[in-house]
Length: 390
Image 1 (cartoon, one colour):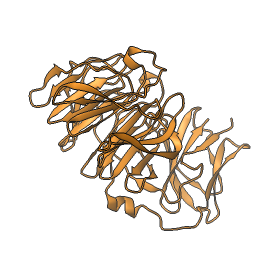
Image 2 (cartoon, one colour):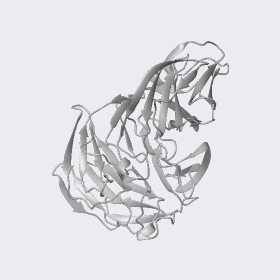
Image 3 (cartoon, rainbow, N blue to C red):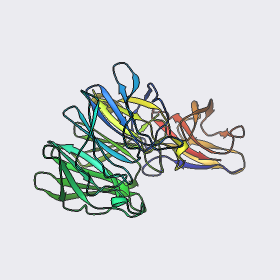
Image 4 (tube, rainbow, N blue to C red):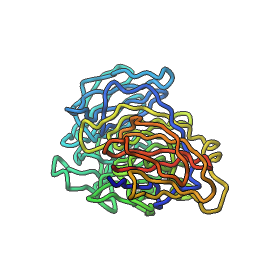
């Protein structure tokens, strides 16, 4: 059987100068959930709705960062997937999700659930962000209960004080998407409208108009976003489940990260005290591929700076398939040393560990047919990951 290899990087080769994040495992959610949404209030992350193996969920689960513990907070929500949630003044505002025009408001002080004004432009898999008491909502598909393959460019905001919805200028392109607000600007990043989008569109909240547009090297979708200072972290991708990067809004540059993140898409991401928390998600289009994993990584500036390679020469590590054997080899012009590797399933389960040598065949005859992540650190200590299809 021939082994196919896919290099997991932006430019089709190993990123010799990629910054590396080291994720640690935290307590799992009570159940596997994908297509979820989340907010963070103080040291609590609230994960809402989504789906399990056999149904859409109707509850909020709270993760306490200090205690590393999950607990179910409220189980009276409308069941839905691909919804949105935002928080303001100790309340969580939950809306959207396919076929749902209701706005649910959970008071965290009393654990009381009330209703807000119905959403006039409800969609699934849209983006949302909050700023100065206004919840901005954009894109998605299945507008007002319509077909799920019809994508929306509608843009609106919900004014919390007046409990009312207001229209804004349409997005430049219709798509499912995500976005975050940094320094009075909304950054709408990636998405899907039949194909993954490589666009970053910027809406100036002060000028009330769409302004700049940037293009990423590749399209991304099925991702989660989280803000840390001037950086917007991008977690996961529909196809490249270990995709991890950040967009620097000061320089308008995209930086890809390598990591040991468990592969996932349609997860959630939050930042607390310079740490990135990622939760749940799924690995295929099948509902039972959802996961309950929670991981955390330090994203402080000192960590990111320490992980940048100062070498400016071309990386000498390359990967080649070997059609004559059931395996592959990693070519390295600098040495033929031994290195340690780990093989994970596509949903993050450990399959095997071992040692191999550069420039020698890595035997995969004992690995069953399937898709796997082959992970190792190169001679510079930079984590490298290869998707293997057998």
